Structure formats: C-alpha cells, structure tokens
Length: 498
Image (spheres, rainbow, N blue to C red):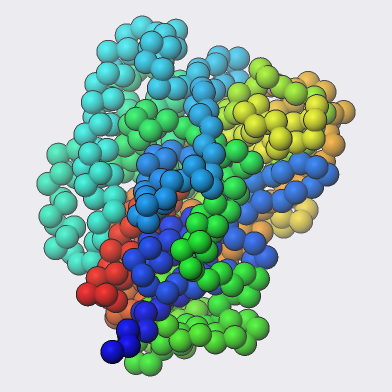
C-alpha cells in the first residue's frame, strides 16, 4: 500500500511569524511553501548593505530566546547550529534632555542603584511593580500568549485573570501606582512603544514585557537580526521546506468557504490544503481575499479599527568607534504624554521627538567597516491616515533634525563624520510591506483589539485560511509573532493531520 501524499500548506510572507509557522508545520510533516514578495526574506526584518555597512531594517531587540530555540528543538536540532546570540548589557540606556542617564538591565544590584539615584523611595515601589509584572507575565504571556482565541467564550474564560490585574488600566497608570518619579515612570512604561502601543492607553497587561526581559535577557544576533531570519530559512529548508522569494502572492484562490491555493504576481499558481498569511492583515483580506465576500466584509470591519503609528528611521554610518554609546539608547524628548498625544491622537508632526538609537557595532563591530560605526535612529510618527505630509519633502528635513539632535546629545561632529545615510518613511512601510496606512505594528494593541478582538488565528468563515504575525493574537514584537505562530500551527496541525 502506498503512503498518502503529505498534506500541503502555503505561508504568505517570510517575516518572523511566517518563518516560525513554516518551521512548525514542516517539522510536523506538512509540506510547506513560503512565498515572499520582496527580494529577500525577513519582512520587517529586512536589511541593506551599503558602503560596507550592514543596516537592519526592523526589530533589533531579541527577548525570550527560548521561544526561538524551541523552533529548532522540535526536530532535535540546536539553534546554535545556525544562529549566534550575543548578550546586550545594559539592555537600554535612557537619557533625558537635562543630561540624566538611567541604565536599565536585569543586574539586580545595579538596577536598584540606578533607581535610588533618581528617587530612593521608589526602590520599594519598584519591587511592588516587579511583583505585578510577574503576575501579568504568568497570566498574559505564559498561559495565554500561544493560545488561540477563536470565540468569545475563550475571552470570558480569561476575563477573571484580566480583571484581577486591572487590565483596563494603562501601563503608565499602573506604573504610576507604584512609582512616583516621572523619569522612572517613563523608564518602566516606554516598552509598549516597541510593539506600537501608547503607554497612556495600552493595557497594563503589557507590563509583562519588564518580566520577560528580566528573565530572558536582551540579545543581539551576530551579523544582525537579518542573520536570525537567515538561520530560520536555513533550518526550514533543511527540514525540506520550499522558499519562493521575489514573487509575491497576488490572490488567494477560494471555492465557496474554502481556500484552494494562491496565484503570484508572475502568474505561478499552487494548490494547497491550507493557506496562512503573515502579510499585513488589511492587505490579506482586502486584496488577497478581495474576490471572496469574506475578504470584502472583514476588510470593512478592519477599516473601523485603530492602527498603530508608523516610524521614521534614519540609518547612518559614521567614522570612528563609540564604546561610550551602548547598543540601545532611548533619547527622551522634553515631553512624554504631550508627544504621545501628538502621535496617537492629533496626527501632527511635532517639533520635538523621542529617539530610539540603535548602535550595533558596539556589540558586533563587523556590522561596519573597520574603524567605523553603524547606527539607526528611530522616531514614532503618526500613520498615513492621520498625518498628511509629503514625505519626499519632509523626509530629508526630519533626517537632518534627528541627526542634529543625536549630535547635540552624543556626537558633536556627527555631520563631519557621516559616511552614508538614508531614511525610511511611513510611505515606505506602505509600499514595501503593504502595511495599511503605513502602520509599523498593525492593529493598535489596546484591550478592545486584543486576544479575541484581534484578527483570529483561523478565519471564522474560510476554515482553512489562517493568520500569523502582528495582526493576530497575541500581537507585534518578536516574541508576539513567534507566539502567534505557535497558536496558529497548533490549529493547522490539528486541522490537517487531525
């Protein structure tokens, strides 16, 4: 008797979520094809090489390395075969316009010293906040982070835990309950910005990020985040998976309430038992499923939701090495709440900004030619639905303003040292990544758009169409999208291999 042909699946998009899902499916014996629109895998974790410098486009902070190691362990492999993780310490240096620095890490003694420098009374408050963070980490990440929310009942089941931890309160208000120093409040609440959330509005459940970093550390992939993606691709292909790069999916074919396959831009077609999309959630429904009634109707309801802001990123390479500038810095501006209101609510381009400064060469000098340094400076900006400016005109002006500020605060002769620079705008997110409104993190992570209220890991109508990535549960960030892959893979493996 011959063995039946293996079940087949297509994953649209080779970002972190897509690759993590593909590895899980392939490890389970499902013949999986990943189809990527751009000329190389990575999605938001794209990269450029320019003038001898390597510039990572997207995420630079690797937390919870265990969720990544698990992808190799599924088939008895070790992530170290393909990827080298390097510890980053301090996790971040936070800097304010008055010159105050705060080194944030999981070195317990040092962290308490840093807190006491700002306000000795807040050391006890920090302990109380840490206990709170550990509680929401257990409920929100360990128990629920990889569980699909497919019906409202599953939401009701989670409700008591969410209520116990006052999930309706914002991260900032919960931090403020324990901490009185304003700078410390900013230091313990800014993390939500790394997943697209406004600390003043994002559910206090996201305070779990503090515990996540504390336990798992903060890591860098030697060669850049792009090397982590390359390692995932290598492992996926080792397991027998298929990559199609540079030929994006144009349409998901359906027959009634069933996905039957995909058609790419080049005209290539493939039939599959299941299709999963790691593409932008609005693009997935409005465009890829646009021929199906379900695609049109769900896109309409997505249009009523709020999307996270976009980003403006300046990549630059300069002469000299900078051992005094740590791997990650946050250069806070003069305002916190007012700046967030401008970005999230008012949709204006403010005169001031907060900068996330990434300096990988301090950990990994090979990211730049010898004696030179690679940086990127990132500022959140309102998405294209709120902020109507001509980025071709504004982009060069904003790049100069950001470099001026980095110069004022850290590298006085930055313009003389500049070897190469370029910037990435909300319209680039829209064009390169099909990101709705140029949003950098998909749906805004507020309580009414979390868990069951986000896109579902398996579509409610097209039963063999699935979502993975930032637009589905649990949300953006590397641990978030890798968690979504675990939730979605569980459903697909059960549905296909039953």
